[in-house]
Image (cartoon, rainbow, N blue to C red; front, side, top):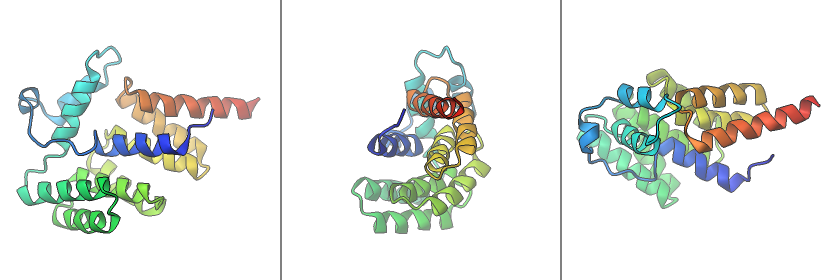
Length: 189
């Protein structure tokens, strides 16, 4: 089964950045929960409202604790949405320089590189994301897409499986994982 490139780009961009440019106003449920709480809930394969929990998690991840870092993230995401990659690069690089411990800054810049098919810099930024937030299922899924595109199917499968283990209800991750499994099973025949 082959997944069309436009679907993959949209799916991975959504996974990397959450749902487009997510509003940065914390919801009531989010005010009392940490990212770890949301990640623990998302790992439950029986979770019914996983999409709400996922959205709340992305909101939490996008809060750096610094008004200037949050502003740079918003500007970078808006520039990416407008496909102004030069401005996105400037804002997101300023963000990673200003707040190197803010995983979502690296994640947004990885998405920007991915959207431009610049897999080397995207993978380097994903490594930073995962060092800061090892349970970032979006970064793992994006890493899997790039590894699969580069022909490293075993590593891609491992990345998809890790992402799926963290977020078993996410249909895009499930589609990527199942698609690669079918491809690999077909090759084994």
